[in-house]
Structures are given as C-alpha cells and as structure tokens.
Image (tube, rainbow, N blue to C red; front, side):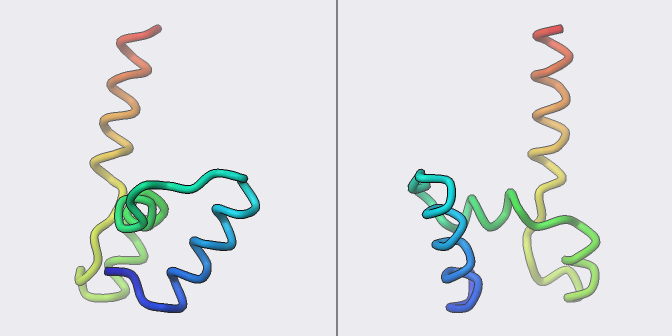
Amino acid sequence: MPSKERIQELDILQKAMGYTFADLKLLNKALTHKSYTNEKNGALKHNERFEFLGDSVLDLVV
C-alpha cells in the first residue's frame, strides 16, 4: 500500500485530472518506474509489465 504522503500526491493528481481511480495501488504501480524500485531494493512494484502490455496493444492496433 502506498504511504500516506504518496496517497496525498495521488489524490492531488486525481483532482487535477478530474478523475477518480478505483484502485490507488494500481495507479501508484502505473506511475512507478523500475529505476525507482531499484533504489528501494526492489521493495516496490513497478510499471514495466504495463509498458510491455501497452506496446503489445499498440502493435496490434497498428
């Protein structure tokens, strides 16, 4: 689960976008780059799988 500080940051982002995400953990994961998780000894989940999925979907569409 994201820290209280991170949840506040995600809330600010949601308000700025005018959209509320159903799952803050998923939003946090989508916004977390692999290099940041390496700084934290891999303790956090990162977005690399989403990146590969997105690339595959784009390849399929194009």
